Length: 419
Image 1 (cartoon, rainbow, N blue to C red):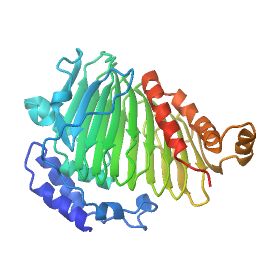
Image 2: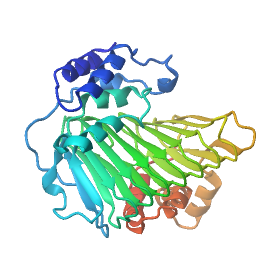
Image 3: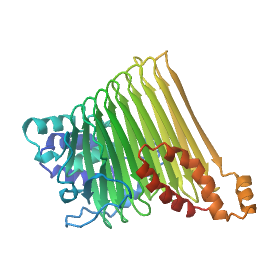
Image 4: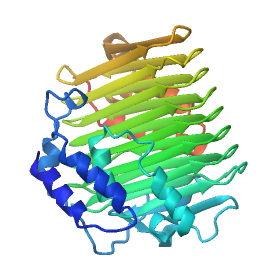
């Protein structure tokens, strides 16, 4: 076991609050968990040296930080600053049918229900999910009443100042027939370490529109997860946009726990320098007639490293399942690295499933053609790369977010050189 994990366990043992039973379970599991090495399949290409070397500390001083403004987006702002919930940035009047509470402030039955569902959607195999179970300070509980559509998105922002460590946790529950949009966003200043996990329980005929922006770069360590449980006829549309850092890791789990559930997942990540980003996406089809469409695209430059492990598991009872996984990768340098592993594990005999992965380099002829037409090398590079990614941006349901992220991605491309 690493010194960092031993320290985390020790700190967790000193906390005694409403989550004590869950923390105790996490501590017990962590105490019997081996620290991942290159021989650990889930961490084979993602070394944890950045975690072990991290000097990030829990900052208790009150620090005023605000999320980056997104033009044209009117959202309900739910803000964590260095791991602590900042209630002052939440709208005073919430739409009817929407509840947002600190878990510790809930009473009686509500608190007991929140405790019962805590960490039941996120699988126990996630090491840093257990770390988050053990160290999360303020747990936010969000619920939407049956049949209610919340038109304003909820934006969950985790803001970290220089050298800060944080562990944020949110539980989201959509009742039958409800609709909600949630945006997860991490913004870090540098030399930080954060774990940010959100669990979603999507009831019968409910719909979730989900976004996760992991745009921290540089000397930041970011490890998190978004985990979804779909009931009968439930649906979700998720978009992930990520840059790399010293270490960025995101685990996504989608569980088809009801019949006729529908899931769409689009992910794109852009890496430069010596950055690392690791996306592990698992889809569990446990019930019949479910559909999954998963598209992942990655562009890697310089000495950056990308990891993708996409697994779709079709259980024996999941007949009539339709599932597709497509992973496309673009190398911009001879020294860049992509490790991709798409997986299909099928135990039902009446399904339609497909998966595939490609790795290619930027088309030098196309680059040359644009340059001969007076387009500079850097602009030609941006044009070609943007076309590779823009298809997934066009699929984002929220137009304001799509218009906001386009120039951010263009600027990112402009910093990435073809070698």
